[in-house]
Length: 141
Image (tube, rainbow, N blue to C red):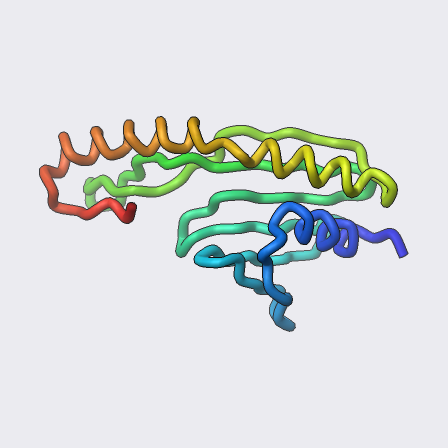
């Protein structure tokens, strides 16, 4: 049966082949990353992150699939201190039916392969944090 959750799971398994089995709460591991599956309001989405930092998200609503990725960013806390975080950087959309799942999955996998952009943004964040905090907060990489 064609539904948002089943299409999303099929895409996610192709994009993240190392993803484990989903728990009853909709969580699965992908190496060091955590994946959270949510369904509601006619949409299914999978958010992949490391701790509180979101890295990737895939949303399925009917025949529309959207993928979003994040890059490193400087976050400012309520007390004025700065630290490492992530921010959504780019998104892309596809029309998708069951027969399109392999193609859309391959496109999303390629879209998420943004290593150069990620490393460039990480270097910018590192320079900003080193200049503003003088080593008061360790950046986790």
